[in-house]
Length: 188
Image 1 (cartoon, one colour):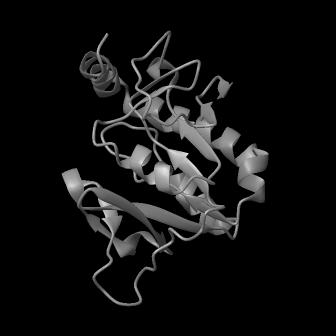
Image 2 (tube, rainbow, N blue to C red):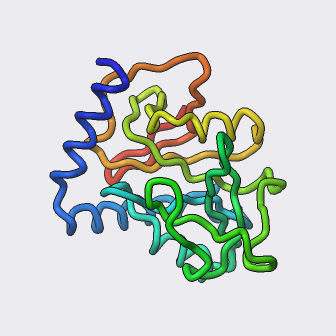
């Protein structure tokens, strides 16, 4: 299958997923993430705001704040993606494709977090295989970010149905260190 075909297949599966299953499986995935040493040791977590039946992140971000961790979320700035510290969801507004992003045009609202190379990076994706290859959304934002910011420990989060026997990949694709699903953990 091509990346385009993989995306079409997974998007259909995500669309068909029941809201209660998405919520429960997201909770199970992040329960495992929060039990991991990577999470426990992290002072800062770079997450994403879920969109279109992705693994839901809102409760996880709230858990980060409750656990005393700094949370940062991405904003697309032209061809680049940058992370910004946020302290509450009111600091977000719809951005690219309607996905909530940090409001950065108001001084003092959020601060750029990219200099924090030790932050745990939670990576979204469309599909993965058991070798931790990742098919993203096609914009290359996470791969470009990780080419520059190479020290982040990375955990991708996905539902079981997003794991395939094999996904197409290129040399420029960057694999996450771990993939957490509701029933498995895959290690690179």
